[in-house]
Length: 70
Image (cartoon, rainbow, N blue to C red; front, side, top):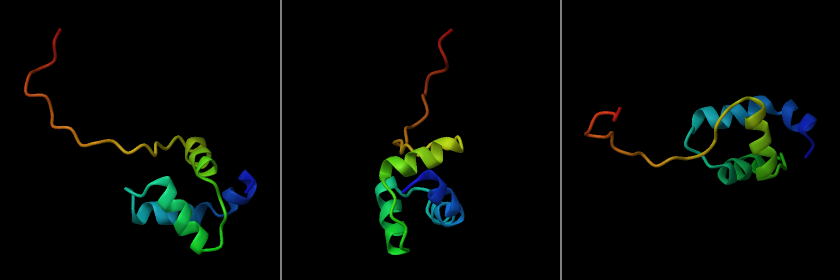
C-alpha cells in the first residue's frame, strides 16, 4: 500500500498501537488486515519512522548496581 493510503488510515494504525503499545509490527499488520487494510511490515516501519516513533522491542534489563564509571 502506498504511503498516502497508509497516512489516510493513520488514526486506525495509531489507535491499535495506543491500545497495545507492546504489539509487534507483524501483529499490527495482521490486526490491520482484519480491518481491510493491506500494508507491509516495511510500510508500517516507515509510517512510524516518519513520526519519529521507535517500534523496536527491547528486553527489560535491571539497572546497574554500580554507578557510572568516569
